[in-house]
Image 1 (cartoon, rainbow, N blue to C red):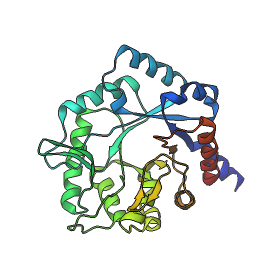
Image 2: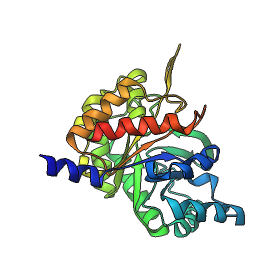
Image 3: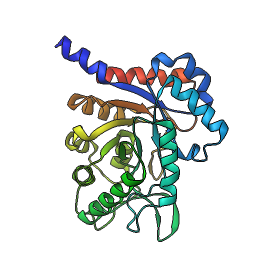
Length: 275
């Protein structure tokens, strides 16, 4: 049993979403952070200053790239110009992998300004698989899709959440990022059985788990990623780690940033869940 636990710890890694406000503290505590996630849209221009910043980050941490506008569910396909900019960034950074959300951000040439949910149907599965193939042709390296929070259910849905993610991963032959806070939000807002998704999702496809904190409002639950990880999300994390310790567990604090020490405490809790 001890040998198995040591092996599990060795393959598990832990990281945070990069924010410039934490830069100095990150270098002071680099031994406690294995991986940084950068938001692609913050670095798409690749100015000289951005290259210098990325060079420093890459010298101290492994990096993943998380994009926001691939619009992998668009029936009119993915934007080749956007993918060319992503390809330039990925080529420069050489991340562990890059990713985007299983959603739609543009349709018929119109930018939606949000992650629009997709219908959970076999037709959508085919569209996503086709778009992922185009992404792979344009951008080198590993590609993963994250489950976004769902603002509403599409009436035409024929697949439940877990079956939908499994079908996408199989048809597109891609990896998955399991955002547990988004599942927590979905449980409040649209009645998703988050525990059932965690129990049924193909664990071998999950390359990364996201943790974050949101808040309840009068209208539901907002996945604001601006607070500590709530207990219900920790419970989902522990449940998934009982199935399979993920290769990477990443804390995504996007706003209302606390001192880095607070986030490091949460990373320690994630390590405990994976132990």
